[in-house]
Image (cartoon, rainbow, N blue to C red):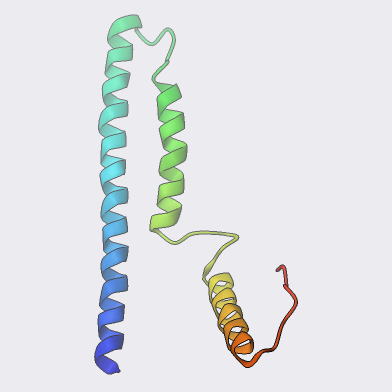
Length: 107
């Protein structure tokens, strides 16, 4: 059992590190590509119209969501909510095994 817990913790930590690597890779790509677009924008029209901000904004929104996922920030579906739902579904499963039905609780 102890070996299973260590392996489980290792796998969770490995998944977390992989998610962080993906985020930092995405962030690096964002910085390089947006900087490149800014340079192209400057040389084509001298920043009279800063069109590179449009892709920076769109990709930046996606990057913000990726950061929220990678760093575990979620104001609605946080760890407490997740743990509560897991316990609820586990209890529902036990009750169904015993033949007890429960009404749906929408929290």
